[in-house]
Length: 235
Image (tube, rainbow, N blue to C red; front, side, top):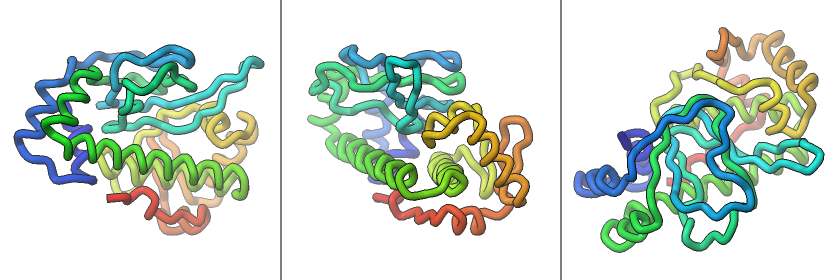
């Protein structure tokens, strides 16, 4: 049930069998949520920590005019805010992109882990540091990279993150994002997102077969994006 989370955590700490069992015991259980559904809403106080076990979700902000900015993607093994007990009300929303399998940890469960299994919580906090590094890269990209390089960078980042939890091959993975999702992530229009995808395809760097993305030349795409993977390897 917690395989994706354990695999992610073990990038930051080698968990013992007792620690793995503790995660299984303390979990409130899993639930399945369809695509395009809100999991947490801005302005509401969260009661649990959510763990994505399968599927894609995202954090986003919505302006009064209806425009959306996706700030990050939550992939298998990723969690919502760990310090849930310290949060008065969320300043963002969390929603599924694709159908998701989700595990929940109560605040009491997080306290139990912190008391009896501090290495687990330490690993979760290291995951949080990586999320901050991802956000910094996104800000730099929107400020300094051209749209095609932003897109190339995003596709490289998703490849490395999904490989880390066994959800991507050496050069391919399932990409459930719509062009609007890409536009809302990069801060560009749907039309511009479509054009940038087509540009990378025309250059032979990527291919799309339905929802399956294939990167024909990973090295070339990384060079195009000026992608440096160290920010994803805060082990």
